[in-house]
View 1 (tube, rainbow, N blue to C red):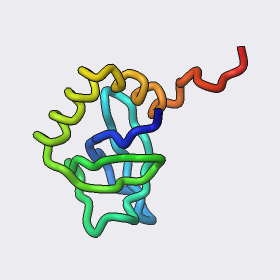
View 2 (tube, rainbow, N blue to C red; view 1 turned 90 degrees about the vertical axis):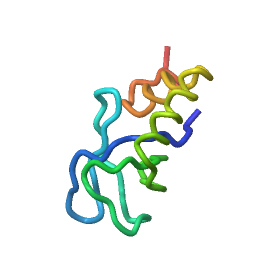
View 3 (cartoon, rainbow, N blue to C red; view 1 turned 180 degrees about the vertical axis):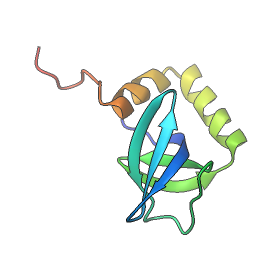
View 4 (tube, rainbow, N blue to C red; view 1 turned 45 degrees about the vertical axis):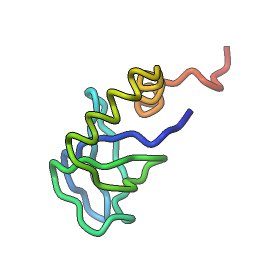
Length: 89
């Protein structure tokens, strides 16, 4: 489905990159679209880019709504690169 998903910045890397984490999944993302990002910030991630900073409360509320709507597990699979969508069977 590929929705934007909140994740927490756990480290900053060179070249406008950061590592984000959610539910034990860690991914590199570009922070080039944001003015300032620090470790501990929550960002909205879509296709490898941090698009927007948000509060921890807003991130938790968004994740809860995604879980209630039944899309969180699918987005986590996609984030982890384990989605079966399009895989040969």
